[in-house]
Image (cartoon, rainbow, N blue to C red; front, side, top):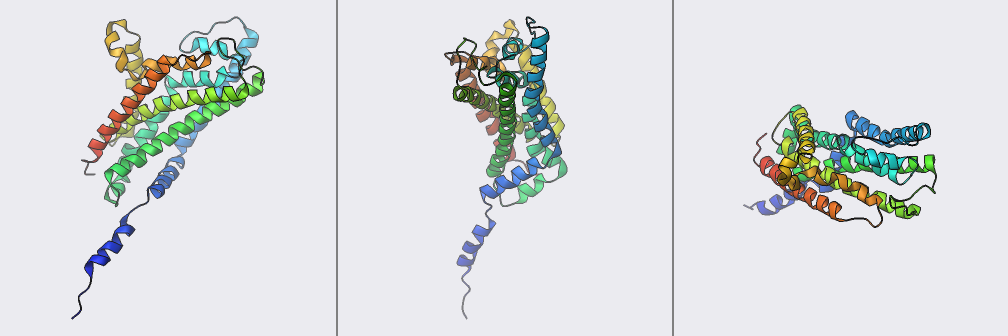
Length: 292
Protein backbone atom coordinates (compact mmCIF):
# COMPACT_ATOMS: atom_id res chain seq x y z
CA UNK A 1 0.00 0.00 0.00
CA UNK A 2 1.32 3.40 -0.96
CA UNK A 3 1.17 6.22 1.48
CA UNK A 4 -0.27 9.61 0.61
CA UNK A 5 2.22 12.45 1.10
CA UNK A 6 0.23 14.75 3.37
CA UNK A 7 2.94 17.30 4.03
CA UNK A 8 3.27 18.53 0.42
CA UNK A 9 -0.51 18.86 0.12
CA UNK A 10 -0.66 21.01 3.26
CA UNK A 11 2.18 23.10 1.94
CA UNK A 12 0.32 23.71 -1.32
CA UNK A 13 -2.83 24.81 0.46
CA UNK A 14 -1.19 27.50 2.51
CA UNK A 15 -0.56 30.02 -0.27
CA UNK A 16 -4.17 29.82 -1.41
CA UNK A 17 -5.28 30.86 2.09
CA UNK A 18 -3.19 34.00 2.05
CA UNK A 19 -4.82 37.24 0.96
CA UNK A 20 -2.66 39.78 -0.83
CA UNK A 21 -2.30 43.10 1.04
CA UNK A 22 -2.78 44.94 -2.26
CA UNK A 23 -6.04 43.08 -2.84
CA UNK A 24 -7.22 43.95 0.66
CA UNK A 25 -6.33 47.61 0.18
CA UNK A 26 -8.17 47.77 -3.17
CA UNK A 27 -11.24 46.15 -1.65
CA UNK A 28 -11.20 48.60 1.26
CA UNK A 29 -10.88 51.61 -1.03
CA UNK A 30 -13.73 50.39 -3.24
CA UNK A 31 -15.88 49.95 -0.15
CA UNK A 32 -15.00 53.43 1.15
CA UNK A 33 -15.53 55.39 -2.04
CA UNK A 34 -18.80 53.66 -2.83
CA UNK A 35 -20.35 55.10 0.30
CA UNK A 36 -22.50 58.10 -0.69
CA UNK A 37 -21.72 59.94 2.56
CA UNK A 38 -17.98 59.76 1.86
CA UNK A 39 -18.44 61.30 -1.58
CA UNK A 40 -20.80 63.96 -0.22
CA UNK A 41 -18.37 64.98 2.53
CA UNK A 42 -15.45 65.16 0.11
CA UNK A 43 -17.50 67.19 -2.34
CA UNK A 44 -18.58 69.68 0.33
CA UNK A 45 -15.02 70.10 1.59
CA UNK A 46 -13.83 70.75 -1.97
CA UNK A 47 -16.43 73.51 -2.31
CA UNK A 48 -15.37 75.35 0.85
CA UNK A 49 -12.29 77.10 -0.65
CA UNK A 50 -14.38 78.20 -3.64
CA UNK A 51 -17.09 79.67 -1.43
CA UNK A 52 -14.46 81.22 0.81
CA UNK A 53 -12.61 82.82 -2.10
CA UNK A 54 -15.76 84.27 -3.66
CA UNK A 55 -17.02 85.52 -0.29
CA UNK A 56 -13.71 87.21 0.55
CA UNK A 57 -13.68 88.87 -2.87
CA UNK A 58 -17.17 90.28 -2.33
CA UNK A 59 -16.38 91.39 1.23
CA UNK A 60 -13.09 92.94 0.18
CA UNK A 61 -14.74 94.87 -2.64
CA UNK A 62 -17.56 96.13 -0.43
CA UNK A 63 -15.61 96.77 2.76
CA UNK A 64 -11.87 96.82 2.12
CA UNK A 65 -10.97 97.90 5.63
CA UNK A 66 -13.19 95.44 7.45
CA UNK A 67 -11.46 93.19 9.95
CA UNK A 68 -12.34 89.54 10.44
CA UNK A 69 -12.95 88.27 13.95
CA UNK A 70 -12.96 84.77 15.38
CA UNK A 71 -10.74 81.76 14.68
CA UNK A 72 -8.64 82.34 11.60
CA UNK A 73 -9.86 85.92 11.30
CA UNK A 74 -6.41 87.40 10.60
CA UNK A 75 -5.53 84.85 7.95
CA UNK A 76 -8.92 85.34 6.30
CA UNK A 77 -8.20 89.05 5.98
CA UNK A 78 -4.86 88.24 4.36
CA UNK A 79 -6.51 85.75 1.98
CA UNK A 80 -8.46 88.51 0.25
CA UNK A 81 -6.47 89.28 -2.88
CA UNK A 82 -3.74 86.70 -2.20
CA UNK A 83 -3.78 83.46 -4.18
CA UNK A 84 -1.14 81.93 -1.89
CA UNK A 85 -3.01 82.48 1.38
CA UNK A 86 -6.45 81.26 0.25
CA UNK A 87 -5.84 77.45 0.27
CA UNK A 88 -3.99 77.63 3.59
CA UNK A 89 -6.74 79.81 5.07
CA UNK A 90 -9.32 77.22 4.03
CA UNK A 91 -7.29 74.50 5.77
CA UNK A 92 -6.95 76.62 8.93
CA UNK A 93 -10.68 77.27 9.16
CA UNK A 94 -11.79 73.70 8.48
CA UNK A 95 -9.17 72.14 10.77
CA UNK A 96 -11.09 73.51 13.72
CA UNK A 97 -14.05 71.16 13.17
CA UNK A 98 -14.92 69.99 9.65
CA UNK A 99 -11.71 68.13 8.80
CA UNK A 100 -11.64 66.31 12.19
CA UNK A 101 -15.28 65.40 11.51
CA UNK A 102 -14.24 63.83 8.20
CA UNK A 103 -11.47 61.82 9.91
CA UNK A 104 -13.83 60.77 12.71
CA UNK A 105 -16.44 59.56 10.22
CA UNK A 106 -13.84 57.52 8.35
CA UNK A 107 -12.58 55.94 11.56
CA UNK A 108 -16.10 55.22 12.76
CA UNK A 109 -17.11 53.53 9.50
CA UNK A 110 -13.89 51.50 9.39
CA UNK A 111 -14.65 49.17 12.31
CA UNK A 112 -17.71 50.24 14.32
CA UNK A 113 -19.70 50.81 11.13
CA UNK A 114 -18.92 47.36 9.80
CA UNK A 115 -19.57 45.82 13.21
CA UNK A 116 -23.04 47.40 13.27
CA UNK A 117 -23.88 45.93 9.85
CA UNK A 118 -22.34 42.53 10.57
CA UNK A 119 -19.67 42.68 7.85
CA UNK A 120 -16.82 42.91 10.35
CA UNK A 121 -17.41 39.31 11.44
CA UNK A 122 -16.52 38.20 7.91
CA UNK A 123 -13.20 40.03 8.22
CA UNK A 124 -12.53 38.40 11.59
CA UNK A 125 -13.30 34.91 10.23
CA UNK A 126 -11.28 35.39 7.03
CA UNK A 127 -7.66 34.18 6.76
CA UNK A 128 -6.42 37.67 7.63
CA UNK A 129 -4.51 38.48 10.79
CA UNK A 130 -5.94 41.06 13.14
CA UNK A 131 -2.87 43.23 12.69
CA UNK A 132 -3.27 43.22 8.91
CA UNK A 133 -6.97 44.01 9.30
CA UNK A 134 -6.16 47.05 11.44
CA UNK A 135 -3.48 48.13 8.96
CA UNK A 136 -5.97 47.97 6.08
CA UNK A 137 -8.53 49.97 8.02
CA UNK A 138 -5.92 52.55 9.01
CA UNK A 139 -4.88 52.80 5.35
CA UNK A 140 -8.48 53.49 4.39
CA UNK A 141 -8.84 56.24 6.99
CA UNK A 142 -5.53 57.77 5.89
CA UNK A 143 -6.64 57.74 2.25
CA UNK A 144 -9.88 59.56 3.07
CA UNK A 145 -8.05 62.29 4.98
CA UNK A 146 -5.45 62.69 2.23
CA UNK A 147 -8.24 62.96 -0.36
CA UNK A 148 -10.07 65.60 1.68
CA UNK A 149 -7.01 67.79 2.25
CA UNK A 150 -5.76 67.38 -1.34
CA UNK A 151 -9.13 68.40 -2.76
CA UNK A 152 -9.24 71.49 -0.55
CA UNK A 153 -5.67 72.47 -1.39
CA UNK A 154 -6.17 72.05 -5.14
CA UNK A 155 -9.51 73.86 -5.31
CA UNK A 156 -8.20 76.61 -3.04
CA UNK A 157 -5.10 77.16 -5.15
CA UNK A 158 -7.02 77.11 -8.44
CA UNK A 159 -9.68 79.44 -7.03
CA UNK A 160 -7.00 81.86 -5.85
CA UNK A 161 -5.38 81.88 -9.28
CA UNK A 162 -8.68 82.47 -11.06
CA UNK A 163 -9.80 85.28 -8.75
CA UNK A 164 -6.51 87.05 -8.06
CA UNK A 165 -4.24 86.00 -10.93
CA UNK A 166 -0.76 84.41 -10.89
CA UNK A 167 0.93 87.63 -9.76
CA UNK A 168 -0.93 87.81 -6.44
CA UNK A 169 1.22 85.30 -4.55
CA UNK A 170 3.21 86.78 -1.70
CA UNK A 171 4.00 85.91 1.91
CA UNK A 172 2.84 87.76 4.99
CA UNK A 173 6.36 89.21 5.13
CA UNK A 174 5.77 90.89 1.78
CA UNK A 175 7.99 88.66 -0.38
CA UNK A 176 6.64 87.64 -3.78
CA UNK A 177 6.70 83.91 -4.53
CA UNK A 178 6.89 82.04 -7.79
CA UNK A 179 4.18 79.56 -8.64
CA UNK A 180 6.51 76.65 -7.79
CA UNK A 181 7.43 78.09 -4.40
CA UNK A 182 3.74 78.62 -3.73
CA UNK A 183 2.91 75.04 -4.67
CA UNK A 184 5.69 73.79 -2.40
CA UNK A 185 4.42 75.75 0.59
CA UNK A 186 0.80 74.77 -0.02
CA UNK A 187 1.94 71.15 -0.26
CA UNK A 188 3.84 71.52 3.02
CA UNK A 189 0.75 72.92 4.72
CA UNK A 190 -1.42 70.13 3.29
CA UNK A 191 1.03 67.44 4.45
CA UNK A 192 1.15 68.92 7.95
CA UNK A 193 -2.65 69.04 8.16
CA UNK A 194 -2.86 65.45 6.89
CA UNK A 195 -0.55 64.34 9.71
CA UNK A 196 -2.81 66.01 12.27
CA UNK A 197 -5.85 64.31 10.73
CA UNK A 198 -4.08 60.94 10.83
CA UNK A 199 -3.78 61.46 14.59
CA UNK A 200 -7.51 62.22 14.83
CA UNK A 201 -8.31 59.21 12.65
CA UNK A 202 -6.11 56.95 14.81
CA UNK A 203 -8.00 58.04 17.91
CA UNK A 204 -11.28 57.39 16.09
CA UNK A 205 -10.04 53.89 15.15
CA UNK A 206 -9.13 53.17 18.77
CA UNK A 207 -12.61 54.18 19.93
CA UNK A 208 -14.17 52.33 17.00
CA UNK A 209 -12.69 49.02 18.16
CA UNK A 210 -14.53 49.37 21.46
CA UNK A 211 -18.08 49.91 20.19
CA UNK A 212 -20.53 48.88 17.50
CA UNK A 213 -22.12 52.33 17.23
CA UNK A 214 -20.32 54.55 14.69
CA UNK A 215 -22.19 57.65 15.79
CA UNK A 216 -20.71 57.23 19.27
CA UNK A 217 -17.23 57.37 17.74
CA UNK A 218 -18.01 60.57 15.83
CA UNK A 219 -19.55 62.25 18.87
CA UNK A 220 -16.63 61.22 21.09
CA UNK A 221 -14.00 62.59 18.70
CA UNK A 222 -15.84 65.86 18.11
CA UNK A 223 -16.48 66.29 21.84
CA UNK A 224 -12.79 65.70 22.50
CA UNK A 225 -11.84 68.25 19.84
CA UNK A 226 -14.09 70.89 21.38
CA UNK A 227 -12.86 70.12 24.91
CA UNK A 228 -9.25 70.38 23.75
CA UNK A 229 -9.98 73.78 22.17
CA UNK A 230 -11.53 75.03 25.41
CA UNK A 231 -8.65 73.70 27.53
CA UNK A 232 -6.09 75.32 25.25
CA UNK A 233 -7.62 78.72 26.05
CA UNK A 234 -7.48 78.25 29.85
CA UNK A 235 -4.26 79.44 31.45
CA UNK A 236 -5.17 77.63 34.68
CA UNK A 237 -4.38 74.31 33.01
CA UNK A 238 -1.29 75.47 31.11
CA UNK A 239 0.54 72.37 32.36
CA UNK A 240 -1.84 70.32 30.21
CA UNK A 241 -1.36 72.29 26.99
CA UNK A 242 1.72 70.34 25.73
CA UNK A 243 -0.40 67.16 25.72
CA UNK A 244 -3.28 68.62 23.69
CA UNK A 245 -3.31 67.54 20.04
CA UNK A 246 -4.62 70.90 18.81
CA UNK A 247 -2.00 72.91 20.71
CA UNK A 248 -0.01 73.59 17.52
CA UNK A 249 -2.91 73.88 15.08
CA UNK A 250 -2.50 77.65 15.15
CA UNK A 251 1.03 77.27 13.79
CA UNK A 252 -0.09 76.70 10.18
CA UNK A 253 0.10 80.44 9.31
CA UNK A 254 3.85 80.21 9.99
CA UNK A 255 4.12 78.68 6.50
CA UNK A 256 2.97 82.05 5.14
CA UNK A 257 5.99 83.83 6.62
CA UNK A 258 9.48 84.15 5.21
CA UNK A 259 11.58 82.54 6.57
CA UNK A 260 9.29 79.83 7.93
CA UNK A 261 9.43 79.49 11.75
CA UNK A 262 9.74 75.74 12.29
CA UNK A 263 9.30 75.50 16.06
CA UNK A 264 5.51 75.21 16.23
CA UNK A 265 5.23 73.06 13.11
CA UNK A 266 7.87 70.59 14.33
CA UNK A 267 6.31 70.37 17.77
CA UNK A 268 2.87 69.77 16.27
CA UNK A 269 4.19 67.05 13.96
CA UNK A 270 5.94 65.26 16.83
CA UNK A 271 2.81 65.44 18.97
CA UNK A 272 0.68 64.02 16.16
CA UNK A 273 3.12 61.10 15.68
CA UNK A 274 2.88 60.31 19.41
CA UNK A 275 -0.93 60.33 19.21
CA UNK A 276 -0.84 58.02 16.19
CA UNK A 277 1.51 55.54 17.89
CA UNK A 278 -0.47 55.44 21.14
CA UNK A 279 -3.91 55.28 19.50
CA UNK A 280 -2.96 52.55 17.03
CA UNK A 281 -1.34 50.56 19.84
CA UNK A 282 -4.56 50.72 21.84
CA UNK A 283 -6.58 49.79 18.76
CA UNK A 284 -4.32 46.80 18.08
CA UNK A 285 -4.53 45.64 21.70
CA UNK A 286 -8.32 45.79 21.53
CA UNK A 287 -8.84 44.22 18.10
CA UNK A 288 -6.54 41.27 18.83
CA UNK A 289 -8.71 40.34 21.82
CA UNK A 290 -12.02 40.98 20.09
CA UNK A 291 -14.14 37.86 19.47
CA UNK A 292 -16.81 39.34 17.19
